[in-house]
Amino acid sequence: MGTTILEGTFESFEDESKNGNEKPRNAGATRKLDVKITNVVHVSPARETFGGLYALSNLDQTFPYVIENVITFKGEGRGRRLTAIETIRESLAKALVEFYPFAGRLVMGSDGRMAVRCAGEGVPFVEAMSEDDIAVLGDISAINPTMLRKLVKHSDGASTILEVPLLTVQVTTFKCGGIVVGIVMNHVLVDGKALTDFIACWNDLARAKPPSVLPFLDRSVLCSRQPPRVDLPHHEYALRDQRPGLVVNPQTKPLVYRSFCFKPHALIQLKKAARIATQNGSSVVPTTFEVISALVWISRTKALGISPHETTKLLTAVDGRPKFDPPLPSGYFGNGIAWSCAECSTGELTSNPFSFAVRIVHEALTSVTESYIRSAIDYVELNKVLVDCEGSACCISKWSQLPFYKIDFGFGRPFQVAPATVPDKLILVASRSRESNELVVSLGLTCDAMDVFSKLIQHELTLKSKF
Image (cartoon, rainbow, N blue to C red; front, side):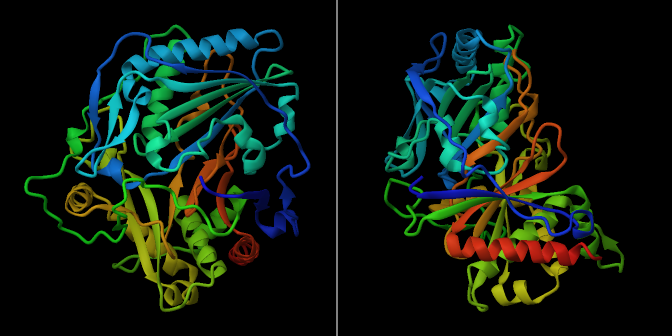
């Protein structure tokens, strides 16, 4: 990722009348985790699959980032380590028969477009073990990259996104019988929905069941129109560097990663404080995601000290599959997301009432229609562009509704799923745990900016909770 990890801190915010002046809880800075890698192999499809170049859509070309996830299971007790690893590895090989692009490698064509070379090279698969109890991980929703990245096979040595495997898996077993499956996906190939479709198939095969989800692999359903036609402005994109690397830029300053837990009561109060006025004089209660997005956008902009006259943008990943008529085919395998763009001057964002930012976010989200997505596809066709994660812009993605907690390889469902880290300029919203209705926002900022951000969010949330 090109970043230096300093720390991860967990801060829990709710209505102060319920919890007083709650102190931030440290995400285990004193905890240590020892992990020993015992075997590294490449898992190829269980039988021969398509060979050749697998074309990617325009939407796949625009977000060259890596997402790292940690999935924790209590397991079945001691003595089952080898059985669990064997089950996961063998079912992975079977799942790759259907989802064969994961076993390929990303390449750059002479036309400047990325594609997948399918030759069955396989998915890097790491077997690891720890003599610790899985309880040493603590609350993994409190982002702690220093510890959690020991549980994934990351690609820090890669100089370009082309060198990052499309999928890697690490299975770490613990002395107590607990199991962690670390999954790293290259976002160029898939989005979160496509990843969970794959995992659902993988789980079915691990439990000797017929696959409940099969991929729709033809990405031509998202090809550009002929001739391409850009009907709408697309400020969510920025011109691409012409170099073939498409790397996530290394940071000049180290980042601090922190997570912020939002309690349901505080979110209800936020939503009440940010009703959106409609043209007929009535008002609409915003969604939970809209108020979280607006609050994070305001606080981050203030924390970075962006000039009042500079434009600030919040880009949101929107699942485009249901936006089409008819919807994209079931099991569409790829990036089905489009990016909404909420933008205004920093001065407008920071000086207006909270409802102003919520309204801009709401309007940006509702603007993502089939026409918008088709126009975006054509815009990418005509302009070599990436999602704009530079300067004062940032991106936010909601993973809280993805079915990670339905995962079951045969030894029970996970008790927590969380990012091992997050890319710079990306903010992730996830569920805290299987049993919780709390939401966790994780992001990275420079140390000084993060300190300001933490204080601003707590101040704003406390203020809004009084309504």
